[in-house]
Image 1 (cartoon, rainbow, N blue to C red):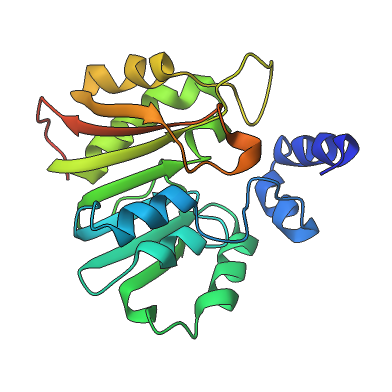
Image 2 (tube, one colour):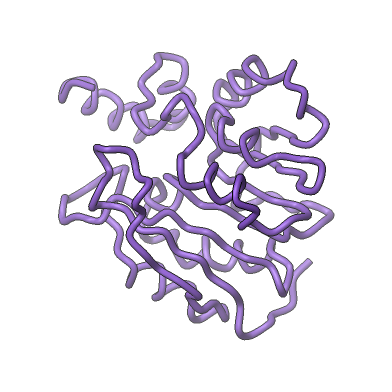
Amino acid sequence: MAAADICLCINLILSADGWDKCWEEGLTPWDLGSPTPVLLHLHNTGSLPKGRALLPGCGSGHDVVAIACAERHVVGLDISDNAIKRAAQLFSGSPKAEHFTFLKTDFFTWCPTQLFDLICDYTFFCAIEPKLRSMWAQKICDLLKPDGELITLIYPIDDHEGGPPYKVSVADYEEVLRPVGFKAMNIVDNELAIPPRKGREKLGRWKRTVHQSSL
């Protein structure tokens, strides 16, 4: 994507209905148009928890469908109506359709009736304003079962200013996740990152060491 398009994308996002406008205009550089390789690898190797999974900021839904299966129902959330419409258009005829759900809603105000065994966060934490990160962590805690797992793809690790995407570091995640009882089980370089993100992305897997009350 050209620099001018990136600037336009950022300006759209910063407007009141920015995410929806980006999807409407096709300015979605964060969308791979295919499953995230490391998530697909973890699914194919049986390394993901079964049960209920949540992907906030799911966009066009490729990751949702990639990890959905008979043993795992996946809910994809997005605040953009156009993103959810795109996901439904792409995957309504999928043979996996009974194993995933797309919802247009705000992650921070959503109150489901069931908790999750797995939450995957990718290009979501880095897309929200840094002042909202503590709220993000508390919401993750509220939505995840006490023995559930959080997977984070930590990107972009660099020193650029502004956003979205806002720069992130492992310390940024630890700063907000530790107070709500999470500890990293493993944080490694994502060797399966797509070429533009190589060296700027880590895979983190987190569990709660202190159980808090939830839904």
